Image (cartoon, rainbow over all chains, first blue to last red; front, side, top):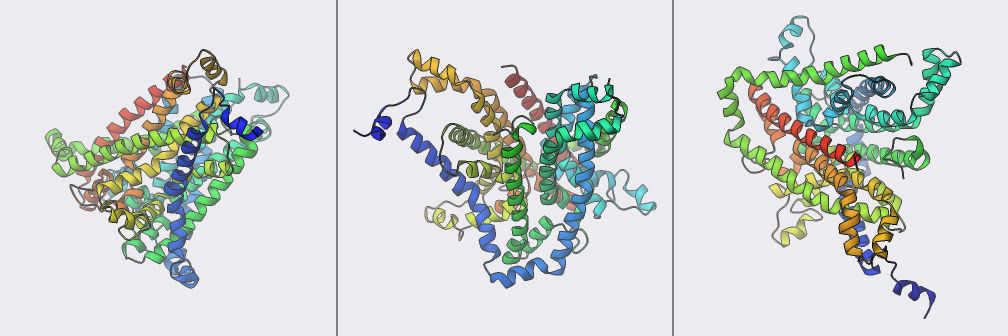
Length: 288
Length: 265
């Protein structure tokens, strides 16, 4: 009897039988490939179903380009704002003690449990034509709903917790000793922030920004409510995908959708690289 | 004492209030212009009740499916070694990363009667796309990572010694799982399922393409809110939205309690 069969026949008491392992393993692999992976594959297959030329035409057409530009603009405003908030909130929450701290932490996570449609609805109720502030702002000539401002607000709402929730556990773990040492050695508040705090949290921060950006660029429900779907003006990439799809222009719809799928793939690759390379420097729970 | 508490705390609370709290307060305040009876009528209209039933029912089914398969996937990814494991592990986050509208049209294309899977399901007489079953499929797709990512770290950190002790004391592998491993991962497993449920209840983008959106049959609550908004029924939309929000709050409270339980072990 060879060594190999020997090992197979000996069943370690803290492991499942080989057959059980094989069945469970195969099932999990097939589940991921067939259920999670196929939607990604079908996007690219459908995107090129009418050939490369049709694909290129769909993604370089005027409305598509303005949708891409708008999505980039909205993310470029929403992500830095939420990053600033994340840093400020994490600093206040992790380096100091105050009453109501756990309430604040819970409230930061709140947008994750709110439906995207409600995230858009709240701004319509505030700033819409029949909203609380809408008529007043209208007289001042300020429009929020059906404009880029509305899209930005709705996007900030849905991506609100991403950076903060990465930084809070990380900065909690790191404590205050390094910052205190910097201050004792004569550093100013800003010097301490730039030279101690920021370098300590940079990978966790990048991780949060990455996820925040992916969601900001891909958000659909919330922006759909406030957008008004004005082509070339308030149409982000996901909304453009919907319009093309509802016009039965499937190949073009999937072509534009494939840009978002690429974004998702790049995000996943960067996210995995961060986890593998800097797992220790990202908040607990992402360590691999 | 470190500097910067005043400004960071002040900015955080101000930003939180302007972006999240005041808008949510506006939502909760709005329905009451209908009067209490009006709000009740708006929330209990048959079409609204059917939508709530579908949203919560399909979310419940999807989170039960995800609880089972998520635990299995987490187990395999933590305990077994095989080539390509890291890539599969990264793929689990695909439903998080893929924008919901993209997931929606992709799932519709797969499960439509002429799609890759739909054509075979049609032979078996099963219709997925444009039925409530399609809603369950979409919600199952977006929910899986919640369970896997909740269970994985706990499973990885569980002490192997305890399992060895159980085996030494004569427990079978099955007994060890149910009496040693399962109680240890139970809180995080439930947390993951609850998170998946909370996300599924409010989900919009990945569902509306595959649902068919037939009133009373396959119309989800978020879509009904949008329809009411398009009819300029602001108060009605706010009433349904508030009902969903209150239910989400209760859910969030439950999740927090589960997490506190998980931490206390």
